[in-house]
Image 1 (tube, rainbow, N blue to C red):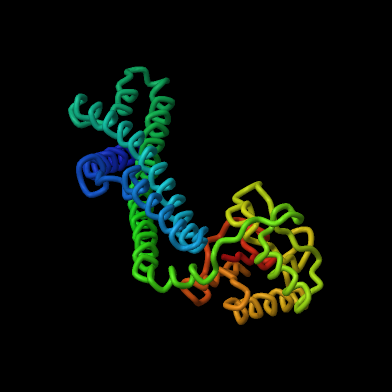
Image 2 (cartoon, rainbow, N blue to C red):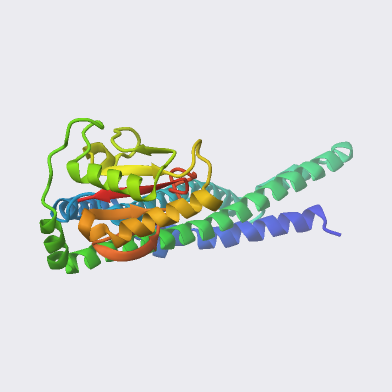
Length: 306
């Protein structure tokens, strides 16, 4: 059976252990420059903007990697802030412990000579010690979580840098592809859809339709190619319902047709079921989870043109 004294000893030992670990967070490996610091991100974002301009606009696959990295870095920073606050608390407890000669300060409540109050004080001492012990365990978990988040952020930043390197290495092939489809001016009607996008829309509607609806130009949310008339969403369900059965088959056929005729139609990329097929780096690639059926393209096929 654990006694208040053993509880106090356990809390003291945990405090000492945490105090020994946490300084590493201030001066050791965990205190290295945040992998997503503003300078590194600014450099990467600058490279992405240049590639967007040189490679025909909206590198959606690259933007997806950027989104992943941004979220991972934000989580790492939040945990780092929490850990700094927790470290201050442990430092304060450890200092108090040292100044009281190594005894846990909660033990002071046991000094009463009043027998009537002894049991109440004993219970309070045990309660305080247990609370501190639990707090230390939370801090130790926070150390582990923050280190994991930091490593994940480093990986995501590395993935983003790899995407940029891969695209840069393919610049000659991609520029030849972009040159084949020279820029077009927005057309009247359909809210400013380009002639090429209109042709793709009409062709797919004729060959694969009808669709419940086709949405093209918009400026809300994260419009990207939609904002310039270079993209349309070919909806296969309504009301944000995930495609299944015949609706999913329609989406599959539409995406396959778009890939097969991409060269003739000037299609830049297709997004369907949380995957992207970019003609500048062909092949289906998974995309990050954006949190919903529509955001993850499970109810429509997105098609962008050069």
